[in-house]
Image (cartoon, rainbow, N blue to C red; front, side, top):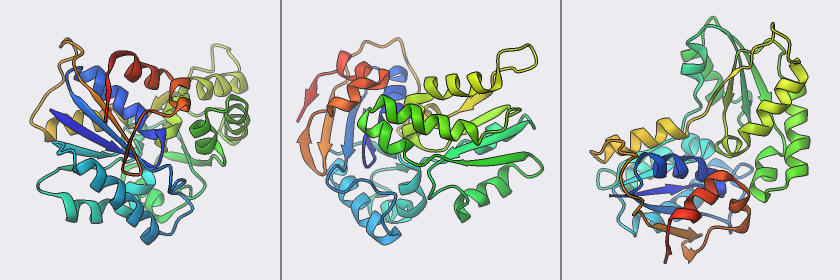
Length: 267
């Protein structure tokens, strides 16, 4: 079984590591776009063209499914990707986990890029899945770029700025950008430090997309999680269509080290 993932950069690591944990035997193809990143500031049409380039490179490896491991690309390019690749290759988009976060009826904070925060897309998800729930949209300028560069100081500064905009009584935090799942620990620490550690300040529940997307990809392949299988899966990395290796920044995260620690990188 072979599953491809695509993103402008290393935001796909979270879903890739989730897949590796669920199916250690799966062949993974990671298709990134260092030549065209970042995708966020691009127009929808321009972003779609970059996404198609990256998806075509992945599809050339004949995967059984393709995960669009990018919220922005899922918003703007998913219809075009599905029109070109399906039904031969099922295409799975990434949606912020607003629905499960709102299910408990607490107070929800959605951390997202400035472009996504307040967008009709995100407001529509809030309307459809969080009606009647108190929701705060938290813009996180610079956080995705800092994560991409594995710049710990920049990550700390961006996380602190976003934490300052997050209500103290928040019960659920949605990580609305795939890059943010790589720095969940610093986000947790920043929110905990701001809220204090008394008995009346329980830690919020965090909601990412990686695990759910990985499970959905397996389902579309007709497979199921089997984490006890031997770690025989290979890893193929593409940079704007070219055979490559994971960038050094990826090794700054547990997800990247998991992949390189157990997989053979092949062209």
